[in-house]
Image 1 (cartoon, helix red, strand yellow):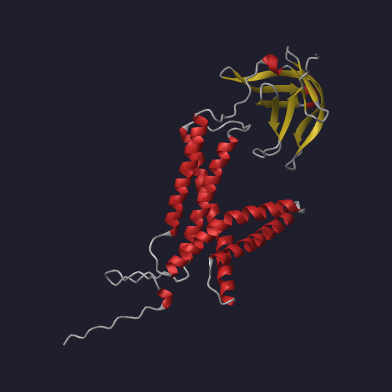
Image 2 (cartoon, rainbow, N blue to C red):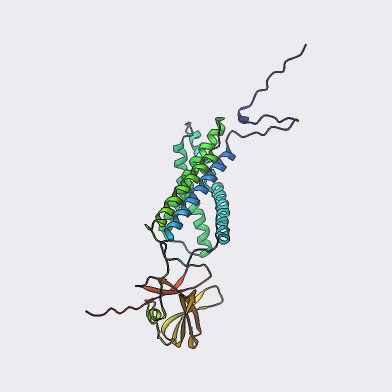
Length: 335
């Protein structure tokens, strides 16, 4: 007589485990806490938030003064891929460092009170963990620079981190509960899909605004050599007079010289030299200035508008964002 086998009991901590594959392969067990699902959902939410925020920032910054946008499909593709990879890496780090501790804190706090792990517990844990994170990283930064930042800076970072963490933490909680309750579907896929739809909608709105002329991309002013000629000031007493014959006369102009320790220190530049316009495809892109008496040799880029042109060159390390800017002195005719 054939004996019928009794079904095996499935322990609670192995809920949602996959059945054994043919050939005696061991079953893959998904833990009831749903750590993996929570991590993936949270990371997907951070990626979606970052991509959407970067897209909005780019659409806004295109209307502001900028040095130019990348030209060519290969360069744009390379920059986009680099930003995407960096986004994934940073999202994973922030998820591990902030969201997962927030979910753990919310779960343990609810258990101690003997209450269900509701979404309010997660929402309450997020600002606590973000404050701890900002305090920790702020202390490390202060030790490295031997000075603390302004209190408002820490408050801004705490608010920004809290706002960014909240959707990711709620998505992670939803994913963990779905695994714990044996639900179907992936929260991470749903977050990715909704994020992609939101990104496409924002991109379409931006393309429509720029395409219809409702918003215009910033372009440097179209100047001629006669427009460049005149007196320029840094607003702190430093001036340079550019004559139409190519003569440059500096008076108290800041000349930033590398001091060998990683800083550019300004020194007053007084004397005369030469200047000429720099052109690209027949269009004035900047000014090349040489004053030998103070070893000033700089190429200045043109920004601003036709009515209020400015020239600048970068100071400090490349990509520092620090600029030395000169504004043209415009003398208005007396009525």
